[in-house]
Image (cartoon, rainbow, N blue to C red):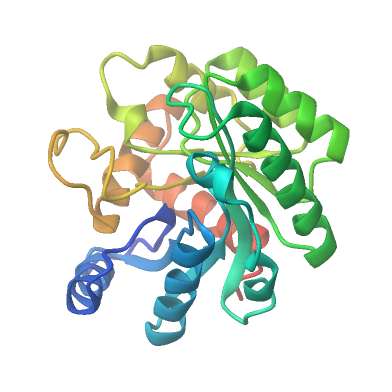
Length: 252
């Protein structure tokens, strides 16, 4: 029996119901007792909410990813009062792919920050090659009490700027990649009460599973990578990340 308890605070479960059930079951067998299924569009968020209602140990977020910003957020607010919705997002800016115009990305990001304030929910941020604009919009709208930089990919300076705004950092399998020393520096300097772990499954499988389709159960490997970066035992990361997720998302 795995004695450590884990929260995968950011994953994307399969759309097919039987496969989603299997993924959740396998994760729980590895000690991953809580999974947050993250919405990326209004339609997808509604699907995540449905799965959360169906599966024990699964919660949902409702948000519009910058890739989908061109489609707007109409209907998103209808999901935010559902009982197992624990955050707004993922939302933010992605200047790497620019799948939506940047002005639309910025507006939709600002709109979702306002919704997080209105509904007193945590905010889950996706930012890629857009740190300055992300911080500028967050400053203009005011960072919600609980703000999470999901799949944090910055170095020490971006980490410090995020932490100064009261945000928490969520580390993914990238922390285990050999070519990510600055990310490990960021993990090392993050206070013990300001970080979480995630898989971002089915993407970004951690070493030694890199190159495979990721699974929420492998958040334990992410935790081991964070422990190595922080110079602590993996059990410490399990406890700290579990407690931080409890505080941020209101789990009891």
